[in-house]
Image (cartoon, rainbow, N blue to C red; front, side, top):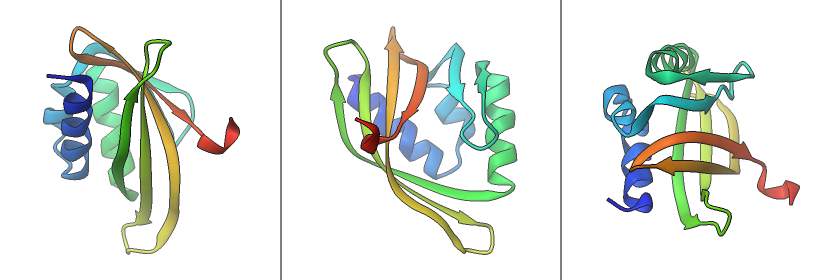
Length: 118
């Protein structure tokens, strides 16, 4: 599976709230940003708990628009992110960049980058 196929599968699983499918694409020691509360979460169990908390408050949808490997080794995904509260009110509609480190076919780390910060 290419990096692009891996990440497309991960976004699709996230959007359908299939935690197990996403975690299956992640390294057991995955390093993931906590975009809601700050800091980072590590490993499958912390990512699972974080997403459960997030989905109890928010309804995010993330659509990957472009996926490209960088010369430095990371894979950058341009993402259209729409976040609503559980009542359906729009909280955010923005473009962000997700930068991935992928090792041995698994997502090892993700960082969020503001595309306007270049």
